[in-house]
Image (cartoon, rainbow, N blue to C red):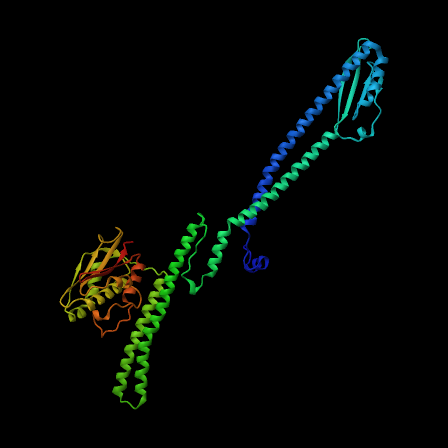
Length: 460
């Protein structure tokens, strides 16, 4: 079950966040303490083992020395000499207790009991025999008990030192990592500050770093590229809004003016009819413009053409040509279709794009020339595309205008043709949208009086 958004917001605020520096510092500190802890534990166990072996070696050496001394005393002076030597050496056996028994098991000597030894938990005892041929039974049995509390305390002190070193190293690593991470993340804070400074009035600003980090350069490049696209789209949107307002203002002003004139005095039915017909034409123009803008808005939102079964593009082109026959004849133009391709396309959209191209060619072609509709797969950039181009003879388009030819509401030099006709400048923009909906692109060339305008279509 997923946690609810309001519960998360109540628990950690509008946005749950964490510090990369703090998290990285904690992880480095924990890793350091684990490594040092493992090394310290290994070191401590090694030292403890060495101290244990040393205590056993010490105990064995002391019993060997005592055995030699007792054997020598028994040989030279008998039991009395042994007992006297044991008593005289008793003060030298600090942190130890010696007990000696005769061969028959009776106690010969025992050091005085010590409270420190009795209370210690770090005792080690070793039983040994002393060869004494001169004494009854031929031997003495003894036990030496030593207190190694000092060694144990040294081991504990060493353990505390290792623990303190591990914790201190972890704290130092955490502090040092925090400082270094903050310095390393300074470019991110610089980028964040630059990003906050960007506003609709400052879309030209770009991200830069005084000390470029290799890991951040791809991100900065992508963000700057995004800002360039956003700035261009924002500029186009502002220009589009201005163009829409301009294009709508003219027919609306005409409608208002003609209506005001018609209402200013009494009019005959015929005059009112003419006014209504004129207003209807303007409203139809407005409706066409609004429909075109809605179509472009749908294309901008990623609408895709609904492809049907594969169809001959030359046959679709012939249907469009038949619709334009009257306009071609009035302009004294001939038309020829060259090439063909069978491609699954959205037939209404294809016809609309080709109709717009033929309408432009009809308006701008020289009287008596031939308009050519060329359908070819060889001219496209890839083998999986088909190119449809409308070619006409007429005045060339200036090179600086070619990149903007498919912009919305863009018009070139009105003196090229038909200044008395009104066109709202969305025809070629619709051609570009239909090309995108078919995973294609636009094509335009104009040189030496020959203009080719068209688009490509993906074959699948």
